[in-house]
Image (cartoon, helix red, strand yellow):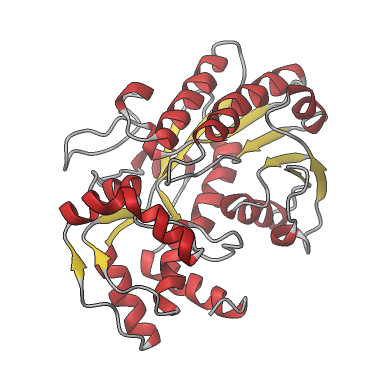
Amino acid sequence: MIGVIGATGHLGNVLTRELLERGYKVRAIIPEGEDITPIKDLSVEIFRADITDLSSVNLATMGLECVFHCAGIIGISGKQRNLMYRVNVEGTKNVIDACIRNKVRRLIYTSSVHALVEPPYGEIIDETCEINPDKVYGDYAKTKAMATLSVLEATKSYLDAIILCPSGIIGPFDYKISEMGQLILDFLNRRLKAYIDGAYNFADVRDVALGHIYAMEKGKMGNLYILGGETISVFGILDFLESITGIEKPNTKMPYWIAYATSPFTPIYYSIVKTKPLFTTYSVKVLHSNANISSKKAIEQLGYSFRPVKESIKDAYYWFIRQGKI
């Protein structure tokens, strides 16, 4: 039996689907009160647990051969700082302790490329980059770096654990509407009046899910693997969406310095229109960060591969249509 902590999330529900497709039995570990829509039609055992409660995580992981820990608070607005720390850091420590206590054969922890200290612009981001919470920007990156260090430390106590660092995740089965999903929806529903300069590296959620399975099957204990994809600009995303939908992209490009200077006030706007925050201080900074991400190690050691980012955007678009979101 394989456990997936965070099975209703974007990555979690796709990982669950891929595991089932390959004949694995899955225990979906989700919080109390969590909407099970993303996995309601899947043949899984559902176990409700509080990741911030060690006794709860102990019960949830009993009898499991492998645990995928892909739950976390992926905040770009900075409003959920305390919850982010409790879930991303303390929650991960609970998962580590529970896996050791229950003699789980292998733990696969989903970290992030943001947990890695970014080298100078243009230099390659790979697994040799430093992990230091004090040298990364934003609460999300700091908590993921802290949790990553905890997992690495646990491997010294003979916990067989592997760390995976995806870049930006994009693609279908986006039930909870990720930041990239929100960008696509805002464009399709004609809510975007301007766009900001910048680009980032995006990996398809299905490829990242397969990378997790390959890590379980072929990864080396104590190793970290980056699961990246292609780099595309915000303009490139909108231009491609225009080409497949016929919807005109906004003509107004907001310079980086204006976007960054006004970003502290964007949460007010998003609270009024009641949509997920997009161009926050953190996201604006990320779009102008080093996106030269290498997945060479995962490709060579795990057999990881990634599809063209435009295929992911197109599949996300058609999935949203089927879900009645447009």
